[in-house]
Image 1 (spheres, rainbow, N blue to C red):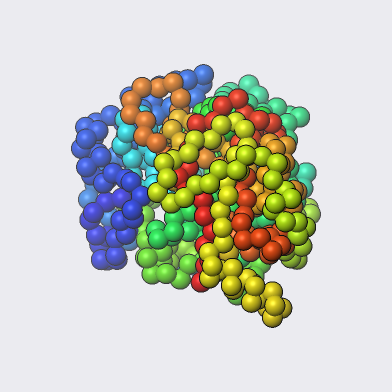
Image 2 (tube, rainbow, N blue to C red; image 1 turned 45 degrees about the vertical axis):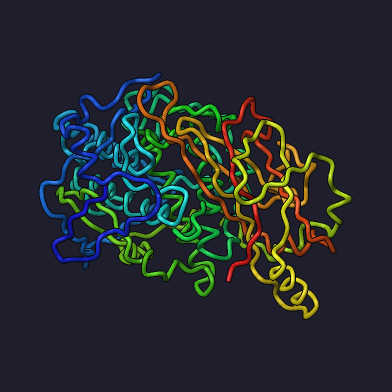
Length: 528
């Protein structure tokens, strides 16, 4: 919810990034500022598919967020560990949220408008209007932290309980790679205010280990920088490992246990409608918990950006009053600053960091590995469309980077950070895609996953808008960065050439029926 007006205490306004967006007021006026919850959605097999998601016009100048002092610290627990009274409290809060939409459709705190907030920030609805895009880069984690905070405050206020805390769905905890039915409703439990009819999973379904298993989570938690873990900046926009891996997979899995990104299904399987399912907030509470866990695992290395652009970036939300409120990233660097924390799951702590990322791939010359067609793609070349078949792209290490790698190997020193960049990944807004990326493994297939020694990461794009609707559908463009330092040193041998294999897949390791994705550039760079 961006706005050009300053908050009352004159804090700096959000920086206008290069990602496409619509000014809040301009978007509101273009939408007529009169179509609220009664008219902004159409039903699709029980889903809430927004046609427009421009938020209500704020009543006046925004106020700056002021952290509370002296109040209770809210404790977020695993959804699998809630007591019976805590489950009842959660249901009562969401029942009140739904009732508010029925009684006061224009109230920005109600269930429908709360869902629209996410729609507005994720490429918008079918009318083609949207705010600042917060996916695919370094705004992803802080924006969602703020979103959950204000949502939690609203729920607590509606039931008069300042200790109310959202639960988290810890799908990364061993044995919890399943849906929390006991809390969020068994299939057909329409009387449960936490129920959503669009969920496609059953009691026997499990999230594929390639996304949330021990190896996959180690790859995420072992990210050395915030750019790799949580996304990179305006100068090198890229999706982080957490967003591109388990985050997107769990979204899609909830509506489709085959995890077919190319066949999106609302609610959770489409970003514009995802927040209309209450489990969205438990899913993202876990994303927020993993961010906190990553920070605390290595406080000296796992640090948030110190760039003033990131720290001073702010966002606007309606709070529980409801006041139009401005909060900036430097006010939410840790959960404790917002008076909440996470109770550790009362079971296995899950995977820890990888001891060494360089120990995986054997040193085999590239010339001995090529068994698939190789495509050379240079800067300025026309976008290349993927098909369901794997595609191998040949690139090279920059001379300076090669010299640094050679020098570090000779001296027995730590190698420089080497980054694989895949830029200009473009996909229709009503489609998603899942592409696994391998280094010097041109024989990789859809069945290959995180346990393969050449695996470096995943391109995961969740559909922004629902298919089959009417209105403008703009393409979504994402960039991806992967730290390949260890794997490159282990697999390069004496060759300067590097084979990057892009393998479209479903979440269950099968070849997809179709792919609607193109990319513009694949190259290797070094990071200072």
